[in-house]
Image 1 (cartoon, rainbow, N blue to C red):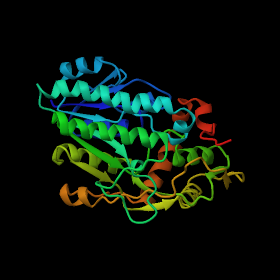
Image 2: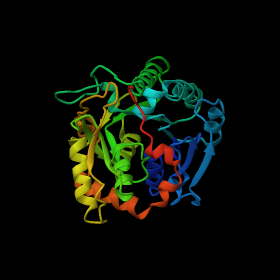
Image 3: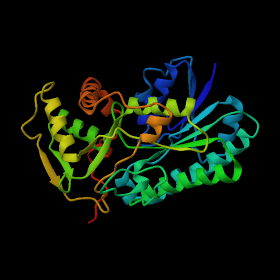
Image 4: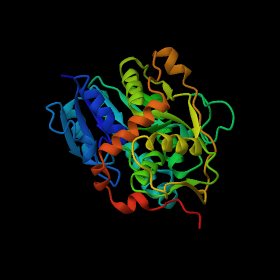
Length: 338
């Protein structure tokens, strides 16, 4: 049976990807160091599967090399990263350690492993590396202009992979995705935060004037794209993965309210209100995903309207998910400028 390693597999995208791969009949090894955003609830569906193994390990640890040589995966999906912009404003050092030093160590270990075994590394990154895109959409060869410590750390990790491609000829591919949403996402992020507040009769806080625009992609569509990249992507290439569907935070909040009121009774306190914006908040991200659509024949299948219904339904039916997370990590506002 073919083996695949997913780093950061206790997180949102990683756990959804593992489920996707197991359903494709792969044996998946989940490597996760277990942080605040790691959640064993995310692996409930497959934790007893004979096609799944969990290993607690930080990608900064040299033990990674031993794991690679022991399991001999034909692919590694690197999703291990600190990802929350607000947290990167409060404590950027963790982001430098995980996203830069961690990626460096993984590359060093993979370099040795791939010299002796056929494999490939898929490094998963973000649209935030391109910075503010007020007009048009970011293409793979556009310059990086990160605005936050988080985005800068991911940009650095992408550059590291690019340098190892050029210098050491490692078999790697980089993907840059737009904002994901769906089941199992930590409620520090916008959509699950709003859902948590709706289910608990709380107001809905929106940064600034709510006009910050993001491109929204349902997580299973992202998993399908990553699988396409693994199977058909070309070594050394960068692929943008997006929905081509932009909504601002106010539009997202209103659509979510429309969906939720058809499923649950809303508390009178559950209304949108605006809070002081975070420092350096980019106005708009938008990806040009023509390359992956044309070259790999991938395109998203789930509309935002359908995806947001599926997402709200999952959280409504899995309220115990929130009990596995520290309450302060749910309600605390980060990224203050005062």
